[in-house]
Image (cartoon, rainbow, N blue to C red; front, side, top):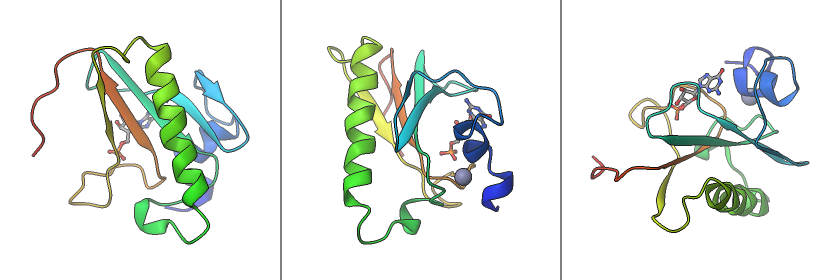
Amino acid sequence: MTEQDCIFCKIGKGEAPSTFLHRDDRCFVIRDIHPKAPIHLLVIPLRHITAVAGLAAGDELLVGHLLTVAGQAAKREGLAENGYRLVVNQGVDGGQEVAHLHVHVLGGRRLGAMG
Ligand code: 5GP
Ligand code: ZN
């Protein structure tokens, strides 16, 4: 998938509709269109990075920023007390559907064991 037809790039550029819960110069937060938990957010970098495998030296601050924004968004959604789960899928076996790095924030119910 190229950057041109990447849905998350389009949303980031305002070329596809979505409601931003947060937006800054490096990333944005939206609700997942098919939520797998009562609260299901996506933290998405503006830069088109395919996935964890697309990260390079120098991206450490961006990755830290994504996790920090994820924690702040979770807190705003009222998830801080009971907890939540952050998920980053990588590739086919990881169940990645959109080839643009993103952090899932899942909460609002007791999540089952992973596997
Ligand atoms: P992945 O499986 O790649 O880790 O997760 C991609 C997620 O993006 C899925 O949970 C899917 O529901 C969500 N998604 C795909 N297209 C859109 C969209 O156009 N808008 C929003 N808000 N979420 C999307
Ligand atoms: Zn993209």
